[in-house]
Each structure stands twice: as C-alpha cells, then as structure tokens.
Image 1 (cartoon, one colour):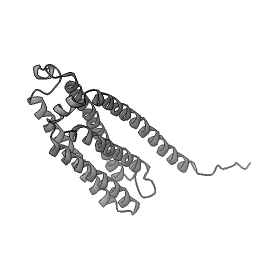
Image 2 (cartoon, helix red, strand yellow; image 1 turned 135 degrees about the horizontal axis):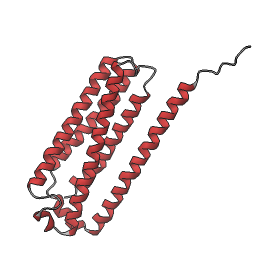
Image 3 (tube, rainbow, N blue to C red; image 1 turned 90 degrees about the vertical axis):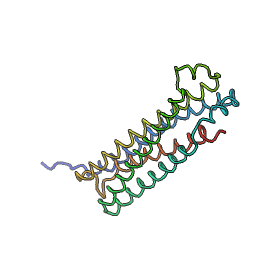
Image 4 (cartoon, rainbow, N blue to C red; image 1 turned 30 degrees about the horizontal axis):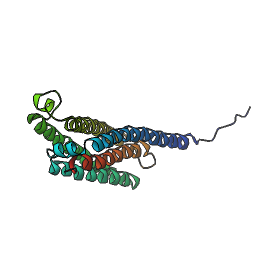
Length: 206
C-alpha cells in the first residue's frame, strides 16, 4: 500500500511563525513604553517648570555616551547577521561579543549615573526627595522607572545574544537557519529605539 508523503515545507511555515511571533511581542513592548511615554507627556504638561528644574541634575554627557553605545551596538548586531548570511561565523561571533561588551558598558555607565543621583539624595524615600515639589518627584520617579525598565530589557537582550553565540558554536544557527539570530537582533534594535526616545525626554529638557 502506497502512503502519501507530505511535502517538507514545515520549516518555512515555522520560521515565518517565529518571525510573526517576535513582531507581535515587539508590538506589546511598544504599547508598554508608549503608555509610559503618554504618562510622561501628561505630567510634563502639568508640571513643565518643575520638570525643567529637576532635569538640571541629569548628566547629559553620560546620557549621550550611552546613546552612542547603543547605536554602535545596533550596528554590530546588524553586521553580525550580515556576516552569518555570508557564512562568516567567526566574524559574526566577534561582532556579537562586541555587542555584549557595549551592553556591559551601557549598564556600568547607568550604574554610576544612578549611584551619583542616589548619593545626592535624589531617590524615592529619603529626606531630600520628600522635600521636592510634586512635579520634581514625579520626574525622578518616571526617570528611575523607565530607565530601570529599559535596563532590564538591555539585560534580557544581552542574554538572547549570548544564546545566539552559543547556538552558533553548536551549529544550531547557520547560514540557512538564522531566525533566532534575526529575532534577537530585532529585540536589540527595539532596545536601542526606546533609548533614542528616553534620552531627549530626560536629558535634553533643560
């Protein structure tokens, strides 16, 4: 008895499904930060002068350095995918390690920035913060919450890119199978894009 053999097209459908799933996930992330941007806009309109006063404490140089770092990291991620498509696995891995180094630099920079603010009493719950005007306190709350949430995304993105490196070494990511690599790259580009909006909102107000 002759059996009917189903054409082997599942991989294509699976790849498309993974890509669609990532785009849907990224859309929910955009909704999340979009809502936070809306909250920021409402309070900025309500307490514009107070926002400007407290924004004087933001370190534009450190914010600008982190912006350059993330833009450079998006470039290295994109180049790593291009290298994989050309079959240059070693270059792809090198570029991904460069991305992880840039991500670490971003987080270290942010750590020192936060530490400096906390040392000056600009953190929720202490006496200096309690004496701030409502708008100034709201600015700081949004600053810590939104940049902190973004920092978590940087960590998650770094884990994903580390997984890409591991999968390349194991041969699970190769020239014809780049979906996980491309999806991780998309996530990282979103992390970069979010910071591009955060930087002017908190650092270029004054």
